[in-house]
Image 1 (tube, rainbow, N blue to C red):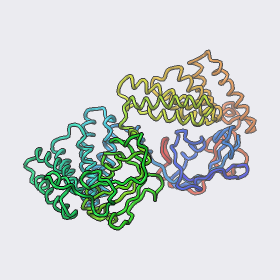
Image 2 (image 1 turned 30 degrees about the horizontal axis):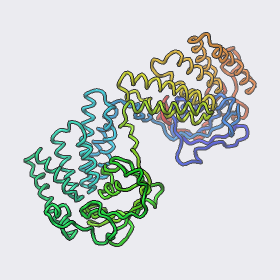
Image 3 (image 1 turned 180 degrees about the horizontal axis):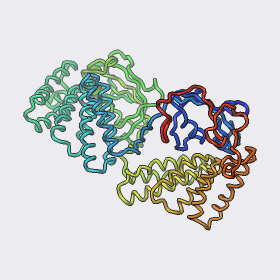
Image 4 (image 1 turned 120 degrees about the horizontal axis):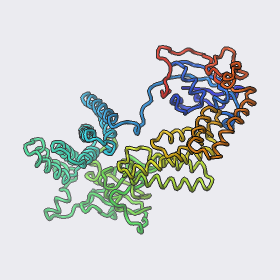
Length: 603
């Protein structure tokens, strides 16, 4: 939708989606917006533009929404319904079958793109398909596990095929390595991954890695002429590299008892050869803190760099030209060989120059258009920090997730005691995020602990929201808590009481009565619940004074006259609430052929 919201009393605008990029979306009937919107927008057709007039009990109640909306205010919204549809499921709402279906659809689309020669589109589709099936713990049934594994493996191999055709050699190596790390990879798939990784390694001048991969592929499939030919091509590739570098590669020379190879021409004499084959040299400009050592394999490092061609000094890339810095994991093949080996020798705070021969950079192919084939590169690198990388969620065990949730819950409690309500709310909400996905916990003890944390943190968020006077959020979190299975009676009472209290503030008196009545049945001795239930009558009287009359439902129930809309609502606006609280005037008719949004529709 698009909307413009004004006070009916003076016409002053308090909010408008048209003042911001994009539009506004929400789900009908889910309590994500005020009552007047949930009921009013549900009567609209696609393309319709209408005015909704919302009495305070259909808007923000007696409390209002300071500073722009005073308590008891009637609001006018000009709303345009742009579209509505079945909302997309969140990943955690999807079944294993849903995820498998998404992966299969993307794989088919990738195949179509590949046949059409649209390599980048195909790569994107296959990569997205991998994302739907790479998390093994999301598939519990053996048949689903088997299908997910097969899709994962085949799509990884397909990405490597696309990358080969795109000449993106590092990405070939990365995806094939991921495929080979999977358990119980069939021999035919293993041969494909080894062959493609070996072919990419030749292009990157990683000849020993290529030999190892192609030798293993030959053992698995000794009749393959393609593999034997690729293995034989290594010698030719080495000869080409020999001509490009005007000499034999250092390892071959040393292995034959020859002289150690010198770094390429142009590398400063005071730069230290840290590769022992002349391919990677380093010159320290600013020493770092040696007390912390150097980054370990797998460490996530943060760096700044400036990359230039050694031949003419022209800059081809720099992290200093962009906001933030650059990070990668050491030894994971995420960067060129010279970086993986060179940055691993640095200390925190160190600034150094790395001189990377082509076989430690982008090989004979280069990285067009800025880096030609066979180029030696110079990088000025500053190591800002390094640390144990945070695990991705899918890498974390159930225990890790429970630990995160417990830590955040404790931090939320500390913030709550200190009166830092918004901080506490944020901590509890984050804790909920770690334990709300039941399928991530397989052991009964873990399931039980996750459930208890989920429930307690939802109740704690509702407590914070009550103190922050964020009544809709109280209702939302208590409703989520009450929808959980097997909620203990004491927790159910808390959720009903808090939701009832919030409903009173939102003038939803019937909802409040229902919640507090049920809470009374569960805990009949609670004076707090009885007092809150008794306060509904007083709240209704206050609303009566504010609106100059009894609420429409009470009047109708006593046989009185139907309540009219508030003063200022146009005479041609139609009362669509039947109690005067919500009126609508159509400005532009919509397309009636598609009907109106259903409950749960995303508009």
